[in-house]
Image 1 (cartoon, rainbow, N blue to C red):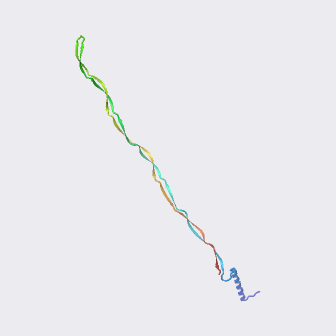
Image 2: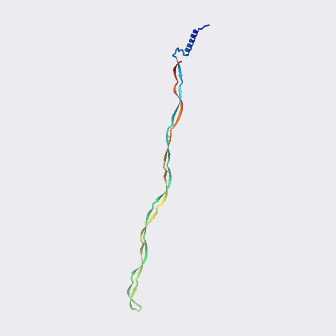
Image 3: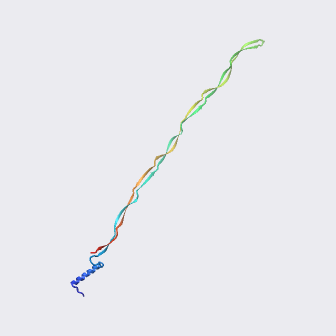
Length: 192
């Protein structure tokens, strides 16, 4: 059995504190002791906006519309036709004098043997003769022929083609993610 004096007890206590301190400091003795401290990595939530689809313009073409119209057209224009009308000829009969009436002296012997002289009247002699007479002179007749009209269908543009542009703006999306802003760090910190 050991008996400690107050001075001995103080020495033992100092020895115990020193050995505890030495065990705690890993064998480091004195005031200049450091311990290794590891800081965990630092993370933050980062928000990023990015373009999903770029802006674009879509052209919508509306084609032209056509329809049929009915028009009155001249199939044959008006014109004149000249017709020659021949003259008319008629045959007429005429009684014409061929020989005029005359008197001649004729001597005859009658039934008693007497010679008798007489003036004999010879009547005029007529004949029927035919000749052609123009009763109407030839002429030119002008005939006016009116125009002949008809209908036809023609294709015309009712409405021209149009282009309508539709502008679609860009589409954006926002994404949030946890990112590391600082890695894990180890450093030496003084021990107290």
